[in-house]
Length: 505
Image (tube, rainbow, N blue to C red):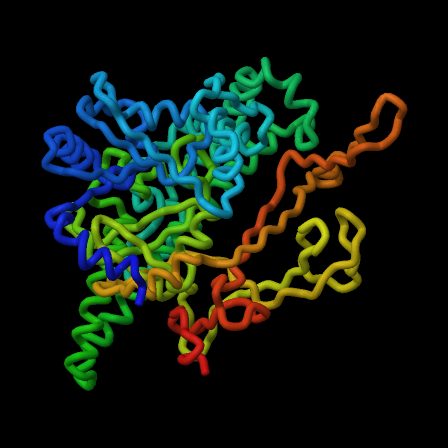
């Protein structure tokens, strides 16, 4: 018997009757956020779970309690979030939870004065970051072409017909291929970057002609940035067609057709979300400008870059049901892991399958990779003949990890009942492994090695710096799995459904 839950149900549950909460995040439509803020001010909504959307610009004068689920990144963030409470001069309680196993939280748990009474420093921006500069140059190029991105990618791509090509529309492709616009963009970007070029020239990625090359390859980069949307759209379209075939199959059982009807409706909702049919105001993740910012093609400072999405069914928004939840990849690898539980708008969902590329009958469309990771320094090596020594530290490499699958969009199903035992198992989370590899720039290495010495020249420290790197986080399995030496998960390579050990056997 778990005494916590026994006492909760026996002694505390009655006092919690009628207590409920709502979310306040960037993925909640603006009108709903404002309506919840108003109810929260009046006290009819007792609890509000907030992302940093509440950090600035929202004033709840009577608020007297704030609970922070983790230590904010900086003292400035802490001041803003904790400062939501007690704004009318009344006493306020601020509780900050420091997670076990989180280096950032544990650091400030031992040095709490550094975040509570720490100095608020001015924000800093690395103007020599290649991706940052590239996205601004590409934004200049888009402006010079005069191409309107509209509110939906269906205004840019050919999405008509039963088998849409999803290629750039002819008119869009011609506009983006305008050589005169490219020359204007290069000249304008050169003038904009004049003041920072002396700093940029000290980096390993810069070279004469870099701006011209970025502008020259911008049309191809724009086209590539549409690929994630294309894969989502094709997967939803294939699902709709397959389920529609089952619905119309009179030889199928009534139960099978009912399930297919529900799945077809979900696929149609996904298509509606991807077309951004319910919003032209930029509030959704598939509003064109916001989408290109999340893909890193355009500058974007408040959205996760290259995010992963989880589709949750049955959440009402506008005319449809269902929604895509987006997370930065390093969070999604665990939050969207096999069997993970998600909580959204008061409902519980469980990740049960992953998006696989549409395949033809009898064809498996799962692409996996093999890699080797240095056990000494974590450096990443793609499997290749003759590579047995780490390219970073010189140590012998460990065994090869086979059948690595890159996580794509995941799909969830509603879970009405979740026991305390199930919650306890999932609370332990996943075992994650970090590896990295510096990004080379053609023939120029993407790293700089240095040695720190004392006044007598005695070496004290060896440092390696890279201005950019590929960082990989691998989900090896649940921390509390039966056999710690067994890594990975079972996957049905046809449906994309995650399997339990019993099902796989």
